[in-house]
Length: 157
Image 1: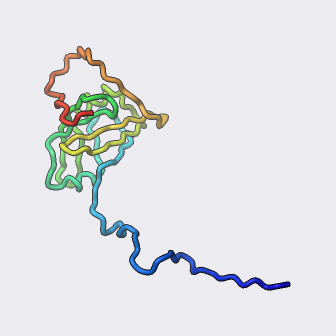
Image 2 (image 1 turned 30 degrees about the vertical axis):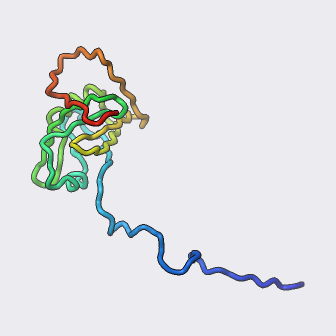
């Protein structure tokens, strides 16, 4: 039997000799918190605590209110007051109840938030089956809510 000589390449070595095109390690990247989620474990109508890392991200720019938009719902923005407790925690407070009722938020639901800038958070709502809920906008909205709860759309959809 003839023996075959094989050449082996070193493990994990790529072609080229020198600089790597890998991104820097995560510890050297700037912290950008644009998306997060919360799960509704308690009364869906009471104030909701947002993740501490998101509150830290807004450090120095703590808004008095934010504007919530249901994803794919149209230009309607819900005004929600923000509460900071002085211990680094941030809550969606007055106005959250109206948003929660209008979108049927319930126990066990999963809410995905995306910070769009300008104090706007887009919200995707997933029900207890973990399926996304879609909402539609009725242009003939005749409810008796005042325009104080609505911020005009500054970003065209």
